[in-house]
Image (tube, rainbow, N blue to C red; front, side, top):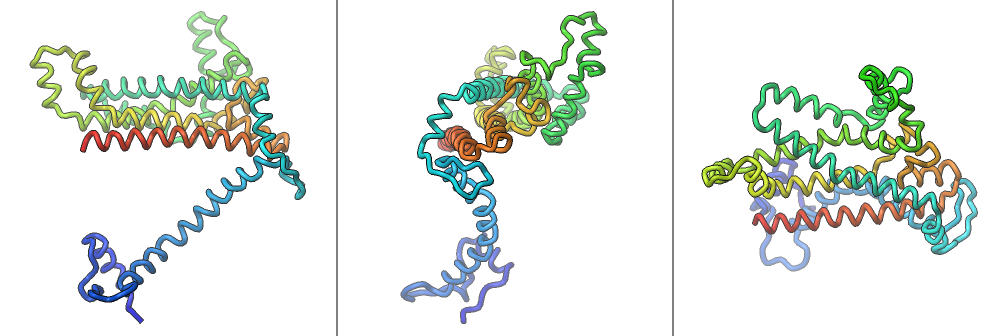
Length: 326
């Protein structure tokens, strides 16, 4: 039997791109012992992760597609195939339209506030201001917390009687503006989005700071020597060179906004009166509150297709940037 190489020799083998001499063959027909050995190592390393991925990700995804074509309630072993009936119901359901509207508002905010705010913070802190490292840590701190913790913090801030926001408004003479922020249908969604944006600003700031370190100072110095002021240098030199960072920040902001379930669940549960329902929250309500598992699966399929579209756009832009910088 052909001996398997040790782990250290296999690692060196991978780095060099060719096998050690004693494993090389020449002039043999069919699959060589070296090729068989490579396949055994690959299968050995990849088998467990692939099995876990299939069980945790692929199988539930396939089940969702399957049950989206049924009227399964989640408990009864019997169900009927309804074809595309759930999808027809989706597009005539006003609650689904409301969830789509709220999700679009969320994405629109995600495309502007975290991107522009993160860029602004990165530009300010990149100038080497005093205490910049402290401010970077403070702005980045929320991204280290889970959205459930973020939601609980902002529930305290929005608390009608002793919350920080209403106490501040009352303290500066704006009592008329104080309210139960999360219980008011007119402010519930914007209050949740504000809490989410507070966390996402730090992520955008860090990515733009990394991008700014890659901007050659020779280009900005040359622009200033040619008479460009700060804003002209920023617009015509710095921002175009930050395009890779911008693509990453935008893609992450949109994907994270589509995943926004936990913070909505913690803060409002989609209420009051579905005013803060997003697609993920609406799917949860239909699947696990009303036990329309087939209908909820159809909503999850729609959400999946939107996410796949965004991810495909993201990889397309990344590939285009790679060709541009090659």
